[in-house]
Image 1 (tube, rainbow, N blue to C red):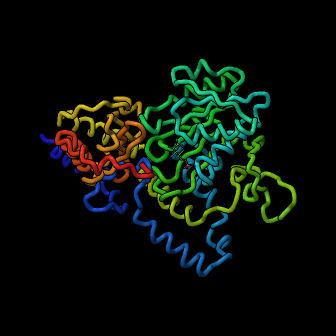
Image 2 (image 1 turned 30 degrees about the vertical axis):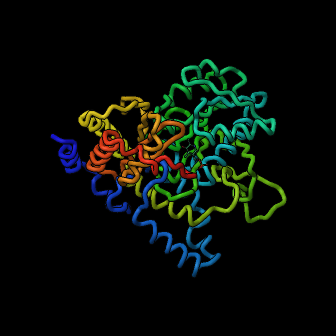
Image 3 (image 1 turned 45 degrees about the vertical axis):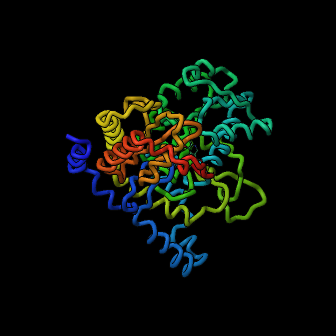
Length: 407
Ligand SMILES: *Cc1c(COP(=O)(O)O)cnc(C)c1O
């Protein structure tokens, strides 16, 4: 059987096949970048139009009360919670991942007086490391980076916080959240998990592993749209002692008392800073509702099946590429990456054929398998295009080596 024939059989038996119709995907495009910007849910434009035209246009400021705007950040947080193994009162949708990292790192430092080290790994997503550097420049933190095999050994009694990304943005390799959380706690440190490449693609059990803090992205597998709000998680046991440094009025216990003195809200609301971005939250809620409806267990199963099938297709088509992701689907998130000196040009040649993946500097071709809307037929087509691009040398055309600003 050809890969295309096998794909037809898998698609016919796929219990999630009908969800593709809930997304807008252009004709002739195989979208393998849902790990970077999730596809548009078909319900999003109407939801945005309703909020703009009725709630904003007609309701005006009354909509803060009458249309549920004031509670939106909490409401959406409580819908994200079951996707990450959190209780509904432990998650709030707010700010970006970068800003949430700042707030959570600073909060952890305040709760561990005498300790300043933030431990992470080299090659973690840049913003995660940069945010530590910002706190370092203010004299509040000391950055320490240890390769993943040496992280446990680097957990000494100077470490306030272990900060790691669950699924690595390049390789997709997963950390053992339970083991590392336990190791951090044994060393007297807190742990902060960045779930940007996990949320909406694979199950996470923050409460099960006893995590302290987490944040994650709204525009990747949650399909919240470009620049969608992120989310922040703080375990309930820390709510009373939390000292979040961006003490804006939306984190106040009574924002509309207009007091001169800050008093943190008692619960997860205190992670908020300024006014909620209602348009962004509206689009995020549509994506979260859809992902929750499909179910994280089923999404994970399909994500694994899609990437396994892709590797199988490459074998069948005799494509030799240097896989830098873990070969076992259980050890990786929902994307896989290959190293090639001309990864950029290969990626551009694929995009010209309608197969949209991405390139990560300096030599990584990254392909994401968003389980909510991809068909097995898309996977077979992508593998066939990749085989053709490599075999024909088509990627060597001049036009494919011109770098754009966003890769
Ligand atoms: C996508 C991603 C981010 C994004 O951060 P923003 O501030 O929301 O742009 C952060 N960390 C990781 C690991 C990511 O993959």
